[in-house]
Length: 512
Image 1 (cartoon, rainbow, N blue to C red):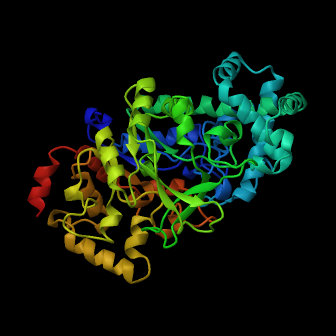
Image 2 (image 1 turned 90 degrees about the vertical axis):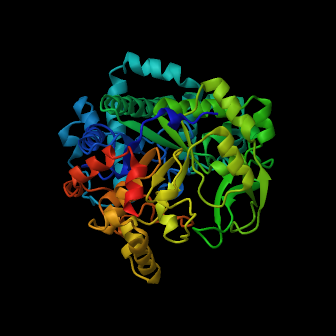
Image 3 (image 1 turned 180 degrees about the vertical axis):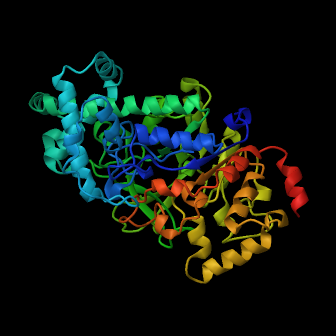
């Protein structure tokens, strides 16, 4: 298959999750805050904005452990935008707690944000809603009704782990669900309206991005959470026992990130059942993602070729086995249903020959992470900018890495070795720049069709700005960008990065 990047010009952009945007109410949000961010990107000559999954955050506030693969996170709905609609008044914010501009305190700001959102939606519904809301509920009803019911029942029973619910609701007995819909009708309407307002605000952001010639790159986890509406409603598609608990779970064996591997805990797919139904569940999921984003990064692409199966009783990911995935026929089914796929394969970690061959047959662009070259550097390293292929997306690091400044200038011998190595291998024509800026310019001069930089690396932020430490469950997904930090950006430098994407090989040849 042809790579969608082959039809794309060389482009540059930044990675910043919605929840990390600056703003007045404790967490990044849609609405005016996101629109101002798009204006900043345009001022800096950037034409790509990569975000993390938009789904409701799950355990540890992770966007990769969600209660729904199709719904979006109500916590990210812009309260400023609801004020502008007249659904919230200034007096409603009188008791909103003080909060950090640099980190998200979910326990502190979550309850008051949800209370304000509820107040706004109750006012909206009391006024009869509007025609757009009715159309949204009709159009998205195939997933929206189940999601709203799942959300209400999860709150009612104190857990998203539906396998622990009373048997009637756990097993989706028809009469029990009908009674729940009747009893909780008003609450279900609120949950549906939350999704409507997220969609409404997201469409405004997406429209503005298009006007500024900025493409939004989304992120789709390959696996879904056990505690999700997706597994609750389609148990037959997942490897579960009779009580609804996973027989085996997903993860990866020991690798660059963790000596004991990563035990994610997600249930595994019964791929033979997906095949029997023509991959319809997946087609719906990918269709939804492509309606939200201009391109989608598929996390842990390797699992389509072969995935690590961990017995559910194992406490770590050390003991497991590789099992063959659906392979090329999956993507053929997706393309037959949806047309050309603007998909980026997250192909980091240890790849099998089968996974590499699948990626290459499909023509999917992979990732090149420069930080990896500083820990395992050899002249043939695929993570050195001079060795980047054209059909790839280049990064300094990802949301799972330390910041570039943290990796270089943190404490310890490992950081010193990285600085020494970078100084040694950085082409001489970048020698007058700060080492980080020199690395960014080197990446910009590579063959990579797209360059997307974590905003922390643009700002030279240290390890306390790190987004996530794989293998840890707490303390992640809390970093926020402060408005004042944007004022420190050298806009001219980054505008040049965005425009120096042509004739790069001549420049690299002149550097050595």
